[in-house]
Length: 218
Image (cartoon, rainbow, N blue to C red; front, side, top):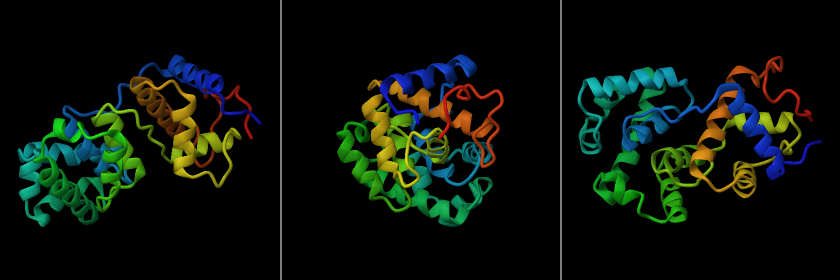
């Protein structure tokens, strides 16, 4: 069983980037758009989120205060392509209420808060879980907070690097202690693991052609 050493994680990264190159994730024209996308992408494909964000742009409301002031039913209708639109409208509204009231909708003010404190605040917003919070911190704030998702868990579990009862925080700590503390690197590693998950490490694995296939599996 391979041990998740810094050398092994570096090897995994090099294999993935050699296969697919830099991913330049997260797509979004502004940090605020990235934050909105991080909430909308919960339990849905990114292509659906793109349609929802396009609706917000077409309506000229992709702005913290304008979104905050929209009637909930209008917001839900605009983000309908993202799925679970009534639930997500409430989650987005909760985030916007916090963002506007706490920081007056100013991204720079938000990311001046120390990382650990800001993460705790985000986790206190209804509808914001660890993955969404870390996506906001890493991709919108360029802060060193590694993102863990279902793909990451599945890949590490199948390669015997974690136990099946490993928690989100266990996996997050693994990467944050064994990968060089570099925001760009953490960004790329997570994005590339998503690529592996989508193309190869599905519920039924398709190992042929996977850049991680030579690494022993547990």
